[in-house]
Length: 558
Image (cartoon, rainbow, N blue to C red; front, top):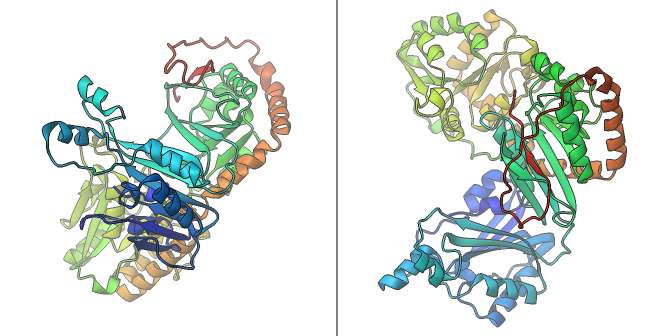
């Protein structure tokens, strides 16, 4: 297991102390530097004699797991001297009570972990060293545990490693971010999971994800000082339901934000039904493009644009070492069949003309795949994965990394104008040269420099031919586009902007609440005859862990 996900993504200097580890030990350098390419990442067995200061120091379990308290405190104090302001130490500690260890003890076999240090002892040493813990996570596996073994271990036997973060700095006020997820497959990663997981590395901040119809609780100040609720693409069935939800959150002291990355005007019928309460009855809205922000300001003036970015970027491939018998052309996007069909006759013309010199990679779209008149084509997909309509993001990226040209056609429609430039960012970040429509992409592509733009079918044919027949120019454009993404469009460069915005909104929560109530009251007379929504009750879960907090059931998406 590597630990790049626990290092603050903004870190530009990291020291990983491994101790004496096995030959097959994998450090976190490669994977973290894909998240933050600007990072200077050092891996050492022991604390080196350096003058460097670090944003984060990762102490692996082998470095600390057999130290006595005095030695451990000394090591922690020494390591803390190498931290930059607001830097942190991250400890990993293998669990001596892990089920495989306990089984080995009972069976007289060699131990998986030869750890003598317990988590309680590590907590005590961190405190004695003058540091403040702010985050504790358990890496665990699902295991079947016999009652006798559980009693012997006296520690959670499913946990194989503890991950603890600490800092010499003062810990900020506790903050929770709860997000109700309406669409997780296509939009979830870039709009929800990736940015909030990055935010979750910040001190004293907890993130909670919930899916539609899932029961959850609202927190009180004794649980978290600052409380944020984000609704992603879940529309209320009625105006009254949305209004009541807003008031419930306000009564609990929450900041309430709506997340949207498609133009809701395209689903006017559903939102007309509830009076657009999703956007009127919130403190603020976050969107992916300026186009969306302009469309939604009629409902709420408090809007922030957070562009889509990549979570990580692999090193740029060496184009000159590629020895491919054909130029590989990629197409992969959801809800873009008509856009592709518009250029399909030219695609088929080129397939016949170039024969084995070009090949095609089509993502999870059997109909479009069948429509391409070529034997040199590959359908990337699995009929057992969402009925073949989607692929995992890993397979999607792999297909891009194995392609030379990516096609991004978009017809000029209201739906398409609302889209972000994410597809270009993904193609560029994986080294594919882009041929795109002016819709959306003309704002980011400098024609002939970091990609090509086609304005009609004639230009599409001319420029596709140019890309096929001019590999050096293709490589040059792909490299310029890659460098742009690496230097400007990685999430590690931007995720803190969201948290800054949330806290800025908190600073004027009373003003925003009054403005939202004014918007709600303005349209309330239109719904005076609306029947109150049915109250759905559910048995409490984890009773007593959080206290007598409100229990909510997230409504279904419409």
